[in-house]
Length: 169
Image (cartoon, rainbow, N blue to C red; front, side, top):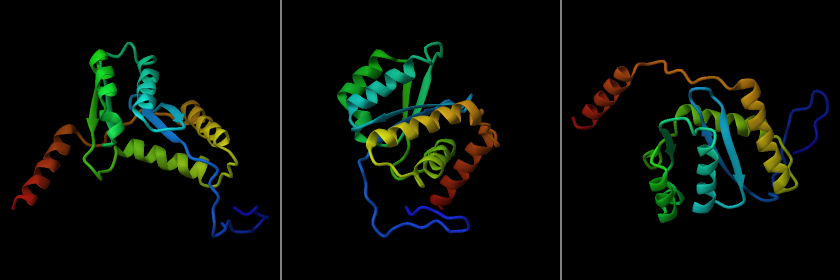
């Protein structure tokens, strides 16, 4: 990324140097809009279980915790299944392969990318990690709000039924 002068349009170089990558686990509480985030160096079952432990603490009073996930094999290992068996209030729901996540979570990841990552210049993984955690904290303090459905469950299920009928016609 080139430094900008007043009135100059942002531009990028043709090459882009990556100084490392990270995995971001994020859980959004739809009742408050707050996000629990964890940045890890790797994306394995062990890191996912640590993230589940992180979610477990602040949600201890909730009778059940529903987590919507993509179909990563990390979420289906014997270690994760054993953790879930020991924590029965946690229920995992998997999105269909290649399907969009819930719009609220997808939108949050988009905002993270646009506001904290896209224009950033990170010379190390700790710098990137710090920027992500700073964004999560700022989001939770200033922007978090409950997710409000604009349609009733009946209207959504009726639309699903209509779509199924169109496929079978």
